[in-house]
Image (cartoon, rainbow, N blue to C red; front, side, top):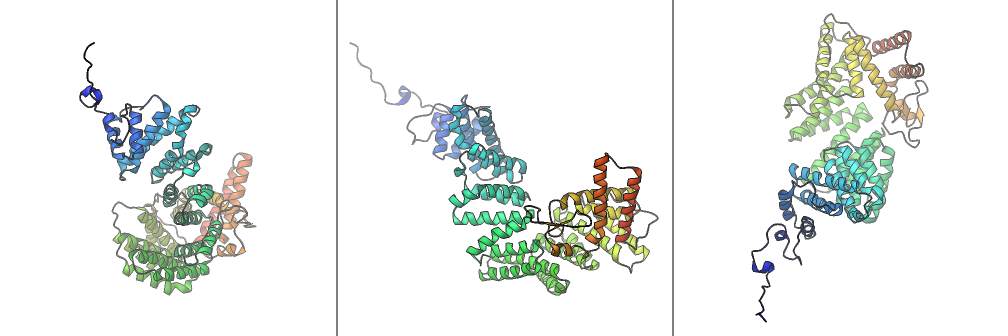
Length: 538
């Protein structure tokens, strides 16, 4: 017999070590991996996310990482998570969205594959990560769609992480998608109470109450906040939100009491930067509530405004204070002070290309000039002409299409002699008002739901109210109050009803509602004077 050969214990019979995928496996693994799926899954299990990113850079050109749908989902989820967990930058986040979306498509395309059911355990994490990524300003509709997808078919809701729920809720509130916050938190409340710790539950309650308040669900916000206050009556966040809720419900006296208490609670916590900043916010809310409650509080409110303005070093916060001052002065019919505050805002603005605060300031300036034009009886014709031009110039800087802006534009066009454009904007305003009155209280904007807004105006049958108190608040407290709008809203409701029934309006019908429109415009500005050379608003 021949001599027995001695084989090396080394792999590859003593040849060169393997390179590529197998070399990327951590040394702690028992056996070398031979496929992309095995390699990446082992790395993911060992939390070697940097190694996964290196492989992703090498193999990102591949359309699929495995012919097996289940394996492909594993790989796409691992690579997506590696990008998601890396330091936050736009490129990494876009890569994470890309891989999570591919995994989502793979699951949907193979939903009936029995073998793929094992991969569905990633569904919750994929959906929640996508909702997190989209909710940060990318696409709110896709964010809520991804959240719903993660819970489809009752798949592992217990795997939802508290940081996902908190981040998604915060982002929805931040981008004014409060109805989505409500959907997420109300739908997850049982899970939150069972599995989240005390701190996470407190965060969730804060975001839910904030969403209720911004969305006009003041009664729900009040009930939720009452439960939280029963646990900790000295919680400054709960106290502050109590003030916001009461202010939303037009209970200004109660709101003032809560804001004062919130300031005291924060002052007890010390004088660190966060406490001082929060105190400043509550103090500004207090000043606004004081003026809403009574014009007799003017001296205290504007002393607060001026004190905050003198203390302020942040230019953006200074802009907000000046905007609030300008708005409050206008509501007190102090037009010169309103215009001066808003003019300071424009001069101190740090945003040469504009921004939301400048658009709001232009809108406020246009409204201030318009209020002065319509109510100041001491002006001569030249001064009135100049004021109207200023109002038009500032309104032309506003791109916002809102109910309030339609009414402003309607007045400016009418007083400048362009009746057709005035009628067009007034129709848009009335259509929006009819839609809004079906949804919320005319005074406090409390959402109409479950009998929370039970009363309606018997005359126009459009305006809805929480109660008689709120009906009195808007009856005649402003130049364009409900007493002035009531016949206009009622007539427009009947005109739309007739148009729907008869598939259109006759010329006689149009003449009637145009006559009603003219009566309305003349009633809100009895000192109106036509001008020879009108300045066309946009």
